[in-house]
Image 1 (cartoon, rainbow, N blue to C red):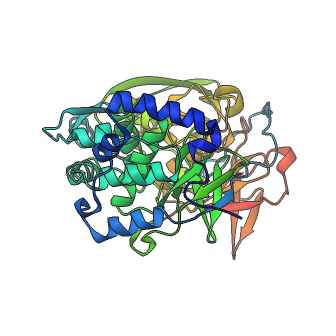
Image 2 (cartoon, rainbow, N blue to C red):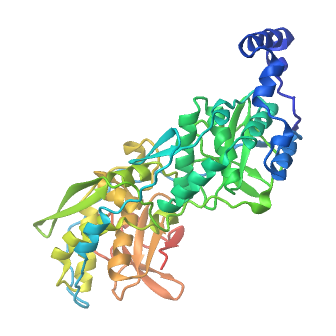
Image 3 (tube, one colour):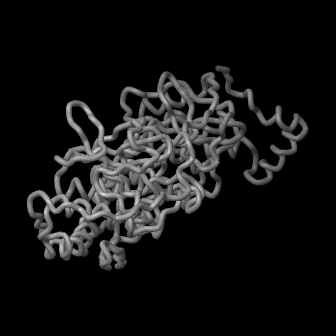
Length: 481
């Protein structure tokens, strides 16, 4: 771990004294003189709105420590299967209690038109997944600059914003967060989009995000790598295939697409950590995004009979899901499905399932997930690993093993209230259900869970894919109650 003092990355070290003189001459021609420039963008300390700001300003000017940025592990330690085998279909025993699923069509229709509306008087508009918000961003904030390109520049930018009327922006963000039920990832997206509207330079976007999030009470730091600035985030969950540093026994992640890997990154001293909280990317409830419903027809064949399943989905929700990082699998596994989408799907499914006995219904649902979507690895479809939420699996033409696990386990839990585990292997995922049937399974605690593989085509409950038969999973991930 190295130390860097304020001024160690001065422009004179990069360009030489002559170049620095020429640079200041140019700056003087633009702003009059450097002193005028400094006064314009760096307000006196007494203009700070709080003692905390003064303390932060002081800490920013102290020596910074250097940490090596590293790439986190991938979700899987081996490449996923390129092709999925298909087995011969065998009849399913029609055993168990009869199934009768009910939905509330009136509630579904009412939800389609329930979207919050907020009216702000600001002049800075931000497009947010179908909605448009207007923020009150004053001229001082808009003209704040990262200069010079070192720690002094970070401290100067902070001084400008700390002396500005930033409270109105914080108030508007909090109102949107509450009205639209945004989780921390939703708030990140909101602030990220706002920063992109205010600034063209990536460094200033990152600084704005750092300033706003630390004012909102999040555990966030500003980092310097070379001449570029990055916000780094303390996150409750693990991120896969991401860049992070380890700071005081805690991981801080880069969310920027240009995050520096395997590089020495300088970070300021601890600032007001006691009052902060880590970002939580779990989705306990979905954001109330603007409604943009579309209809999709899904077709599959079961026991020589063709079935059609109709569903409604909110395109704005799909667009929101697309932005999600590779956070740990439990986030996707336990996220709810939008009620309109869920009800429209179940409305179609129940016409085929009602009147079946439980074992038959569970297998019908399993075969629906196996056969309704083409199999394609994420690396081929998205050029990166991507875990899908349940609605995304319904939306996309292709999916792979963990996406189908998310969809199937959600439907089983919601429709049948059965205890479900996801089974994670080095390159594959399946599910296991706590049901009184014979077949392949695992003892988890004192209970035996029966394998249900939503990717192995035509496999009934209790049948494992041959290469995983009897093989102990690396991890068991339980759906929350």
